[in-house]
Image (cartoon, rainbow, N blue to C red; front, side, top):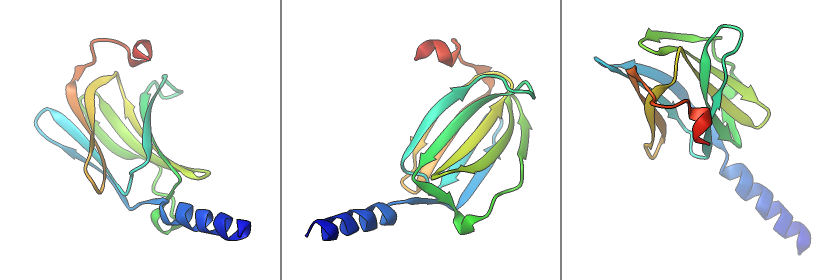
Length: 134
């Protein structure tokens, strides 16, 4: 009985794992939207400047994998307003999408039902450093 419950729990956990199918960036006159198809269990982090002087908005998709187990190209250039580029990495059982920015843009996170969208104002900075907001 105990083994059956453990197996059922493992099957349920496996079935609910997210598969990230696509990561795209679209631009408008003053905005950039990043769509992550297949992301449902996610969290947002703000990372300080790295060696390329970008700050990163990190979207961590927990219990997820990249479709087909493929590693995408190293960076998708955006170069529009405050948004520099996108990067996607598989880190253990998590997929991390890095949105590299020159400075912190105003943005909002939208659950689309089929994933998550990060809608950023390309030319408008946040009034405060996000690290000070947590």
